[in-house]
Every structure is written in structure tokens, then in C-alpha cells.
Length: 584
Image 1 (cartoon, rainbow, N blue to C red):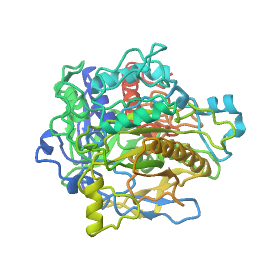
Image 2: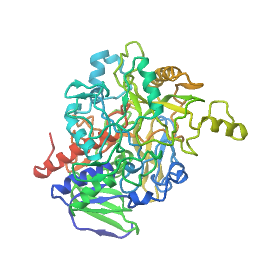
Image 3: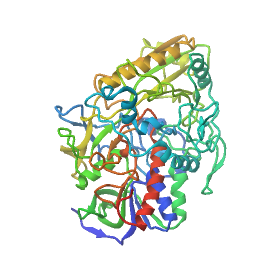
């Protein structure tokens, strides 16, 4: 190993500076703590995107994503397969750089349903234990929706989330999501402008008996000043959303919210191009971290508290590399680090093509959609269906990017004059209805260190063991039928729809960056790695914050829940600092 430098001790060191790291840095520095933030990528801000919207640079080459040439993951579908490296960023695209995936996300900002936090117990209560497949390892979170609600509220008001409440203090509110859990107040901002595509979906869904509402989004519908006094302008509906940064700061993003809030205190030192390779510990407490800086120098940063706030997969890998916590063993079901890896079951949807309707899809905003929650989670009766779970269904102006967003009906040649005629006809005349299915946990889906492949530093890559299961195949087929029915009721010229998952999970085509689990939360140290404050059971001065804490993944986007958990963790860290020990 290269020569090392030991640095002065600080109150806390934060590994990763996205939403979770930014929130913790802001909350802890305001409480008087000194924090060092270590980010593996470079500095980033709105000025970096002032050059324009380069689709090749961001949507094709994924410039904001982690460099898989230096560190990637390996994938196998079951324990019998040999895992192979993911050589090109495909199915998911975690970002690298200050702000993390909070810079490049698409802005959809959901609260999970109350049932999602108690999935196992509520499923058993309603359908009996036999409704859960034998190899499915879903479990309750160790926290309820109502306990997390105040932290959802803090995140939404900090970030400036747009939307319409459906349930305020138990009273159902017309126009909002009727299935959401009780919230204390409405969103800080009204919904974004509804697109033409969204309005058609709203009408069709309502006529079929569904209950449509505007999807909550992290792009400002009007100028906004948050509780920290940070002002941002409203969205311009530029059409470049996921995989892109926002040059004016209208997208909710850690670099224009919590990170400036932390820097203002003078107690945050943010070091970029810092790749953490190990958490230092004595077997009972962490003492700091070891990392490579941009010059290749190995540095050690001592700290009283270590905060893992990197991407889901990287949080888990760092614990395994540091030999912290018991690695999960699928053969026995024992161990917790790497357990319950989940993703998103996105095989259902529909495309509708209209010759006489111009949707102007080049004018849209992050998260802009009309949604229905009627088919999500356990919002419908599953008796006799042969599966549990569901998915969020939504439609809006799908960003019609001129390279990756060109759509044409089935049977159209992929090149030549006929293809050109088709895209001229349908480029602005098509809409997508998407269904985002939940991903339950299974005993055989987990994360561990690969025995063969290593990264640029000679360290083992993280191995993913994951595949589609019968429950999700039935769920996606059911969702596909319902979504196609909605599309057909719009009287389009051409409708293509349905629900099917590939023979095996395929890491090549992009699906979503909603990877969860591996360091899951719960109320029992035998079945979870962290408690409800995301404090490790085995190392009380280590907090692991992010979607790695999800015991399974519901049918919603994860960012709102990651933000809420981060605010709750910050509260726990302050309490721990006053009274060191396990939090209850």
C-alpha cells in the first residue's frame, strides 16, 4: 500500500456526499459538530451544466455515473452460476461526484405507503402466512409510517417538493392520492403544470374507476425559499430530466440545498476525489476511515462517528471489505450484511400512438406525471391472484430526447426512409404509461464479495445475486393487463402494451437506479444490520444511511424515504453524541 498520512481527528466523517450525506452534514454542523465529507467524484454545481443539454454526454455515455472501468459489480442469477462483471453502465447508473445521484435523478419524490413499512405482518394479517412464498424473506422495517412522517415533512420542505396532499391528519383531500398515509400538512408547492399526455391519462383512468392525482416531484413549480433561507427559481420545463443536471437549480438537488447549508456553518470540510477503501475499527467501535486521495496518497481520517452515506451497493461493500457485521449466508439464512438485496420490477407498460394529437414532449419537468396508486402495494384485494404486491402507474410527457427518446410503432424498420417517416409521424404524437412494480426480498437474493474479480485498487468487487421470481412475473402480467386497458380506452391509432419480465434479470438495458437492501433496518439484531436510527447494532458509532436500509423495495421511487430516514438518523446521531451507546 502507498505511504499513508494520518489527519487530525474530527467529530464525524461522512462517506459519500449525496442526499444522505448532505442532510447529515447540514444537520450535524448546525449542531456544532465538525464534519469531513469524503466524495469519490469531483466538485459539481449548476455552473457545470450551463454549456447546454448534451444527450450523448449524459444520457448515452452517462458522464455523471460511477466509472465502471475502475470499479463495477459482478452479477449472477443464482448460486450455481459464475458471476461475471458488468462491463458497461446499463440497468442502473449510480452517480459519482458532489451531490451524487441527487444531481442526475428524475425528481419523483414519493412517501411509502403505511403498509410498506409493515409488509410481512400486514400480509399475514390479511391473507395468512401461506400467501408469502417459502423463499420470500420480506420483513417489517422496525418503524412505522407515522413515526417517519415528521421526517418526510422536513425533507419535502427543505427540497421544495411539488404535489397535492391526499390525506391531511386523517382527512381525505380531493385531488390528491387517496391511498397515502396521513400527513401533517400539504406539500410546500402546488403541482407542476399538467401535460396534455397527463390529462388524457387522467381522463381515461378516471373513466375506468381509478383515482388519478398529480405525482409529487422535485422540480419547483414556482420560485421557492426553503426554511434554511435558500431561494431557487421555478422550472423552465426544458425536457432534459433524468441523467442530466439542472443549470438553474430548479431541480431539487443536494448541491443547491443541504450542502450549501452545511458549508455556510464553516464546520464542513468537503474533500473530493477521495475513494474510501476501509473503515478502521477495533472490533467494537469505528475509529475512522482510510482512503485514497486524487494523488494516490493513502490518508486516514480519524473520527468519533463514522457515517456511511454512499450508494446502496457501496455502503454494503465497504462494510464487507472492513469486516464489520456478520456477512449474510443464504444457505443458513444467518448473518445480516448483504441480506435482502432488491431492485424494481418494471416489466409492465404501454405505448400509445396518436396521429392527431401533439403532446409536445420536449416540454416537461423532472417528475412531471399524473399517477394512480390503485394498483400499488396492497391497495387492491389480492385474494385468488396468486401473488402479493403491485406497482405505481403513471403517465406524462415522456422526455422526447432526439437520440434515446425516438419512438415508432412495432414493425417499423430501425433505419431508412420508412423509419424516418415513422418518427416524423410519431415523435411528438406518442405517450408512455409506465408501471413500476415492487421488488420483495428473497433468501437467495443478496450481496457479497466476489472471489475472483477486483477493482483498480486490487479490492474484491461486490457480487450481486438476483433474478426475477414467479411472484413478480404474475404481478407484472397483472399490471400489464390493467395498463394496456387504460391505453386502449384512449382510442389511440396504435397501442402496444402488456406485462412480461425477461427470462432472467438483464443488467444491460437501463431500468432504474432503485437498488436497495444489503444493510437493512429492523427491530432485531439477528435479522437486521441497523436499528430504526440506522445505527449499526455491532458498532454503535457507525450509522449507515441510504436505501441500503430498505428490507424490501416498494413500488415507489426511493429518494423521499432516503431523505426522511437521513433526517431521523441525524436526530439519533445528536442523541448518541450526548449519550453514547445503542439508541432505542
